Length: 376
View 1 (cartoon, helix red, strand yellow):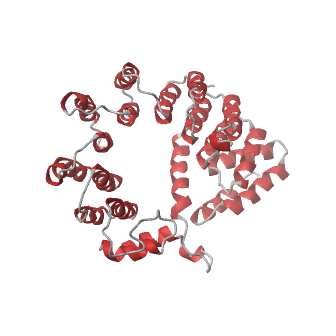
View 2 (tube, helix red, strand yellow):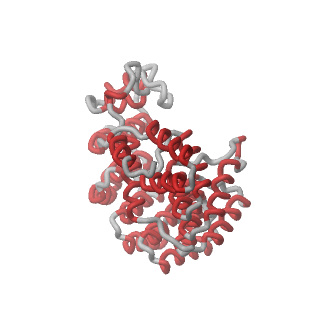
View 3 (cartoon, one colour):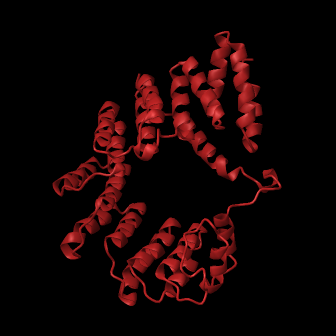
């Protein structure tokens, strides 16, 4: 049976993702709770803008990379020192502070320029990225290389200007003497996939093949997503085997895309096979398996419930509870009512009890209201 994930599920999924972070309040934190040094540093950044004064904050943060300036605050600061400060300003959503820090670097290279552009890109300030890209290299003497152009490509794609991004990609070797790398191509390929432009998508892939540029995990993930979008998940799984044979490790995105693809096609058996396989997959450096995310469980539970495979859905739910994740409410309602109709009342009641332990914040009230609609 061919099906699509419902709009109501996607809306609930969005709310669930937000609740995992926005639902944490200071009143619910234990008295002994103390944020890690990097978190404390991000908060402290808001009160300080002078790199000389920030050095003391670096010295107190054990999670930060070591710098030669720690032992002697009066020593000349390296570009790397300033870049670390810029990255922290970026993480704290303070791109203008990152810009002021950039201006204080005695000798700047493309690395610090990329840090500056990234700070504004992360905040969605696309006009500012374009303005800095056009102005700063000429003023500072920094040469804008492939990495800098990749940030501009990402900016153009984020703005929906895929044609302009493609034009820039083509101009890099012809007009600027720069050979795009796999990141350059992946950025534009992803934009074509997002706007469902099959011609542009496959044209970029052909360019990659013609130039004999090795695929990375992102390239394979994009190709897998394209197959799944076209309901050709078995072909997508063949790509999974191909990338593994080439020594490229699939990641969580790889498996989530494939599992969702099979679920969309109503093939729960293949989805479950991949779900179990991802946890057992051998990886480099002695690592084993890829850990499923809340997204993985949500996709599977919704599919199994919709296909009336209640025993399997219950099994995945219980694993989900062990991880501390709350499954989607409507899927749980259907599962619990289905179990009750099959005379599995005790199993249904146990799921209700488990839900009460994992649902937090304002969602707990919503779940209590939904309990009144259950057939128990």
